Image 1 (cartoon, helix red, strand yellow):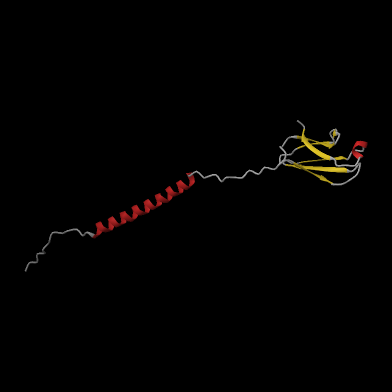
Image 2 (spheres, rainbow, N blue to C red):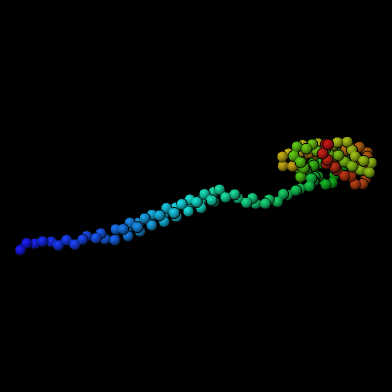
Length: 140
């Protein structure tokens, strides 16, 4: 007896094509998810930031004297804050007769502060009883 194998028409299996298609879809999904992450990162880096409003604090120019009480010849320290940087400040006194001559001067630092001082005048005019006003003003 002669053996004669019977060959049927070979039809390729669909499984390799299904596996290749699934791998292609998984690869495409990974690529797209990576791109969306890069896109999200690019958007985060290039998106303009909204400026946070800041509140401008304005301090009116002021002075502080030490000591608050004294007598003729007492050294008075004058500290100032809230002034325009670079300004020249002159210190004078006032009474009912008007202003004194300049008793002290200082230049305002970059933070708007100055420090100076003077000896309370010995002149008869400033020794009389009554309130006296210390004035700090810009030189101009």
